[in-house]
Length: 352
Image (cartoon, one colour):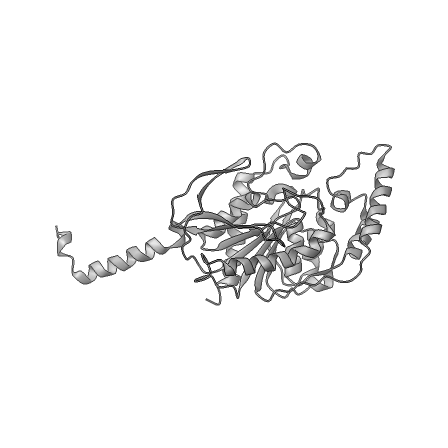
């Protein structure tokens, strides 16, 4: 048998370079976690990224993740994806998708949206939707200023993913045009059938004697607050690919989404009782001539894209977010995350 000590020096050099390439491959890195602190204008921006430091069990709220908290970043594929959370959301409910993106080499940033997050849910709906696109743009700016990432992260082609109210943000970043007055018009025409998307989690219709009062009060508030017909249009030229998951979209001018300015992917859930598909995601699918339908989940509810799903949800919140009977979360969501990641790889890395 030939001794390994007789392998020519050139072969050792080749093996050395192979070892270096393997060590630098993002799939071998752990998932780092950090945070850009809040400023006077914006909340904190959570960050998931490739790290060479050792991952350890780390607890946040009801979740325990294997993360390299404050770990030293290492270069991945040089691209950023921003995730816009849903109403009352937090970064942790998108950790599974973030992990899959990091494993593919992406840095993932999750800005905390003003007055519509898990710490402060005082002003959801159109008021928040108006602010969110600029918050995404400032999160991109903040990551670009961060000395940990600035030397190797390229921000000329950024991805945006959003779920629910974050899906509204995503459609805006894709060039969609909407207004509070269109939200009002939708609720005037469809209040009873799409009640939760018009009023949120304040109350529900039960078929009881007070339903009439609830509908009257809801319309009174909506008409008073949301009569501004000026179109909201938000374009950030750095955003080059967008995915909208179960998006709130009844208030969009669908002509503006017929040919989105960037590649747009959609994820839909047929059992969604918060944002009824025929009023929201299906309208986008019918209008959009170039959209990619990344996944259509026939047995999934609105909370399917919260991954991991918060445990112990009860009451109206639980009714809207808990998985319907028959939904195979473990067998479904890893594939949805894989397809979402592949979408961003195709559209953000093609120029590299």
